[in-house]
Figure (cartoon, rainbow, N blue to C red):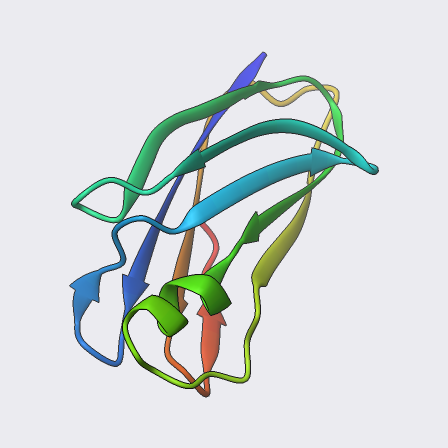
Length: 105
């Protein structure tokens, strides 16, 4: 079994994005959800079994709370956990109001 963590850095400010709601889905089913801490992190979001997942960060609400207009209501990463996968996955988001970069963890 594998585990998952994430973090969000607002590259427009160079600071962690605290309080961003993050949802993990498998198909249409919500597997886990949480909000980023003061360091922009969720260190233990979920345990994963093999399959396809979608990690969604509700960035639009966070930008609105900061008084920033954005074109991104959310950011997402689709990923697959293989049958042979074990260990830890870390999937970061680096976002700005007009640009989104997802780097492999």
